[in-house]
Image (tube, helix red, strand yellow):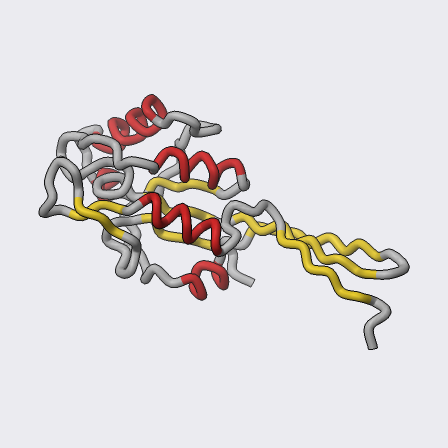
Length: 172
């Protein structure tokens, strides 16, 4: 089992069925420029529509959010500016985001098999296959399409805090 897997299972047995409840929490590696805000580095761009709504839903489902940005490698306070921006402007965010990777981890492909197998997701405009849209400020630069990401998260059960499967104990 991967070391980043966080979960537990509970079996409930009755006379007619057995149910399996699996509580699975994922690690979400969250980029900043081009993902949370439009590209404006070293400045901070405008927020990308829908990002904070999705982040709040991820937190509500119990997933761990880790900032994964090139700003981490900057020695001039760019990381602190990004964290302060997220936590000050993040309407609906349940708890402040304070964790960050030690250095920028290059994102894997946007692939649900990988996400579900290893219990992590890269939300990053550099992630090959992530839903993108043209930026509002600079239409030549693409940003994460949070509306499409939200739909995919819904469809793949990412906001569900547990999955329930029923097995009929009377079945042959």
